[in-house]
Image (cartoon, rainbow, N blue to C red; front, side, top):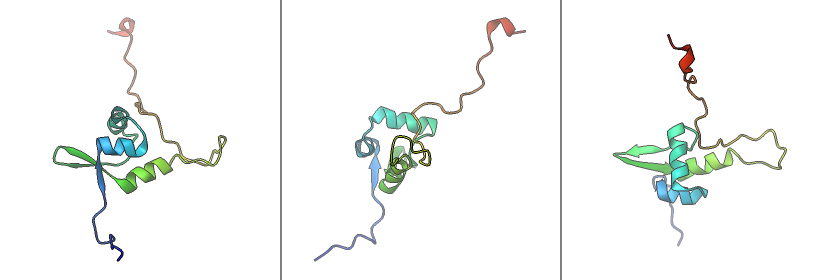
Length: 94
């Protein structure tokens, strides 16, 4: 007897399980969430959850065939991608 799982809702993972799923530390996944460079997520009350298919799509977005593959997307580092205007130096204040 085979089970039919097509009528079940998608599987959701909390941050610790999602980090193990993609092979990153919990903190790195949190940083990706803060900087907007990570996989899509949802908030259920105060809990952050990730859909398994969103995690897979995010990982696949960086898939490459070889080291010089320029057609592949890039999964950015967990860092601010568009820094704010740099602070002015003290000498330029009026």
